[in-house]
Image (cartoon, rainbow, N blue to C red; front, side, top):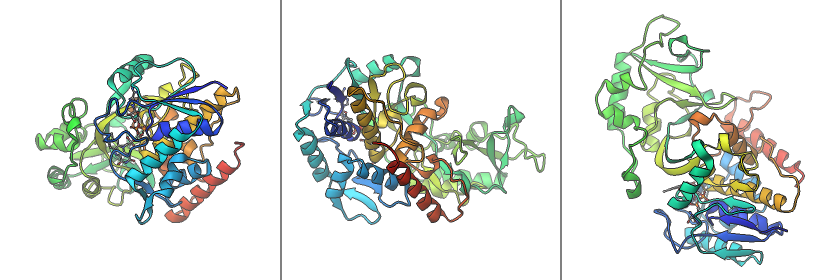
Amino acid sequence: VKTVNVIGAGLAGSEAAWQLAQAGVPVDLYEMRPVQSTPAHQTDKFAELVCSNSLRGNSLTNAVGVLKEEMRRLNSVIIHSADETAVPAGGALAVDREGFSALITEKVKGHPLVTVHNEEITKLPEGITIVATGPLTSEALAEEIASFNGSHGFYFYDAAAPIIDGTTIDREKVYLKSRYDKGEAAYLNCAMNEEEFMAFYEALISAEVAELKTFEKEKFFEGCMPIEVMAKRGIKTMLFGPMKPVGLEDPKTGKRPYAVIQLRQDNAAASMYNMVGFQTHLKWGEQKRVFRLIPGLENAEFLRYGVMHRNSFMNSPELLRPTYQSRNREDLFFAGQMTGVEGYVESAGSGLVAGMNAALLAKGEPLLEFPQETALGAMAYYITHAEGKHFQPMNANFGLFPSLPERIRDKKLRYETLAQRALDALSQMEL
Ligand code: FAD
């Protein structure tokens, strides 16, 4: 069997290396720490958690809980180690951060089929390779990846607007229309009168902003301006920017509102909508409070909050296959946050799929695509089928799953049904 290179021993790379080794495939695992570090890592351990020690929800009424359960059943080193080092955290799976990384390091390093090399990789190696170097990929390798990907590139900053659960938008208050009625009516419009706008503006400029890491400060505002920064430039700035009402007359009255917030459909199933031009760095609780002042969004549930942070990720819809293989080189896989999945568990999950597939390729067997009904499959589908132009990293959420044949109004029951369908689909796979 061929040896597979794995670059990066973070959440995704450690999982990928483990899956390969468990499948009987030898691995050369390259990790640059401690020779060289990233601006966020503090130790030389594998799968270091750079921020929170929580791996988020652990129940099956939560998409990331379903993802964990699928990974548990596929012998994930990340999830099993998290279970073994868990600390009390209510419905979440939080871990003893040091114990968690130490255990993963011991298991992966100690595996007889894994050889660890502590060095920075700067060129994409020949042979079957998984690149899992994360959102803080070293500069030399980031350049190499950007040049391999050509014009589709490798972005460096993630400036994401919030995404809303489509079923929680008040359809009585919003209207479907494209500006100047160009093309088909594609946006849901939330209209405001002057009084509503002023109240919203006041709330926005006084809302609390999340703290920036020092390494994020320098280049932060180059690309995309957060909505709250724009608002602080003057009362009218947003009215000439993302909230401009021209061409968006309300079809019921024929009148042009004072201000409009547009929501753009974010997935083919129309279960998710993003707030156009509303990339933001407000604290999450503040986003909920302030954006619920928008007419039609009073009860909105946020599937993803707006974020702005350093984050190298690729335009996967144009570059990757659902097996996490590059479309341009079949023995090159990418995994982790750099593929546009977002979060510790999601990164590890993509590493698991990439690892399983690289093992199959090394053995000359057919590769696996996870069914879309599973959380692992829904994530792979999202990153390879989202619209390339507006592609943004995404946490696991039920909006990514194909909708159920019947409408279930009760949210808990709906989520439980989706979870059961996911686990059934997984158990029917020939693995
Ligand atoms: P990483 O875990 O970062 O692993 C990449 C590995 O590759 C590292 O060990 C790195 O040293 C190594 N490497 C890089 N370049 C090279 C090279 N050229 N050669 C060899 N090795 C290399 N997600 C959450 O769910 N919760 C959070 O609280 C959270 N906070 C975050 C805070 C920050 C500051 C950042 C940047 C991200 C955060 N994320 C969080 C997002 C994401 O889940 C984590 O970044 C996660 O670690 C991604 O996993 P990964 O395997 O893709 O990358």
